[in-house]
Length: 379
Ligand SMILES: Cc1ncc(COP(=O)(O)O)c(C=O)c1O
Image 1 (cartoon, protein in one colour):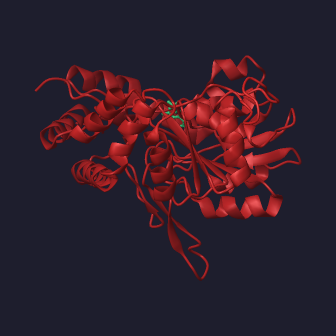
Image 2: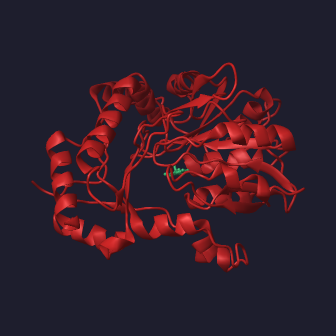
């Protein structure tokens, strides 16, 4: 067997048929029926009223923060353990990212650490659902209410994951991730459960945010007069061809999620007895989708994730390292941000964590090989 790739997208004839329709009819740019259908289907699926498709998840985050009209120096609280897109969206908009450490079980932001980071300048909290597992949202919603803050929910990695909201009250109910905050953002990059190659979307129930987002993604053209502008916007338009690909996948999302959950459970069954190897969890209030199957190696093994990755690669298993925390990024330290701040859980995750092959095209044979090699390398 050759190298087991960390991710391979799984595309079907339906994508081909829809894209062919774009090519045949000439609707290849950012107008066309697939865009609207894609926005409508995805927002409905996630339980939100409005969807605004954009070029990628990074652009979605930038526009989500833009909606809040930050004053220079306003703060947004986010996890240190995430992709740089989150922190830079705050900085691009003149704000200050304020960090919290990760929960050692779910690797998502530790929600018990958020309140102590709230100041008079705090405007929003940006929870990021990590590697397929939801953030515990209820405590954040309570803080948002108490301090009048917005919630920007980054759901790039959790398409279709669910969260049991209100579980301490009388009416607990399951909600889809990306359907909980004031604004949520998605990425449809090729390694995501739903992919458009490159792509993203914002969801909201707020009609004025939706209107503003539509304008901002399209250079703030005015409806009353073309080439007349009152605001600076961006060209973050998704194409009809990309939306066509995404739409085809939404139509089979239940199968996609079932496949991911099969993979997650199969890995856990086979790897759970290896001492000193932490595996993904599924909290009782969460239905996770195993976007990427992460593992965290105990220091007792005498190696970090980079050495572990090298040994796996030698045996033809491809992996990717975990995120490096925002407080360890030279680009921010050079700007005087996060000086002297320490987030030990995130530091450990960055040193000891990686994810193993998790794509939708992963076969049972490949999965067995990954488990065999992991076991061999750690014995
Ligand atoms: C949590 C999270 N947010 C945002 C992004 C950015 O998305 P994109 O790569 O589409 O810009 C990613 C990318 O994978 C991500 O993992």
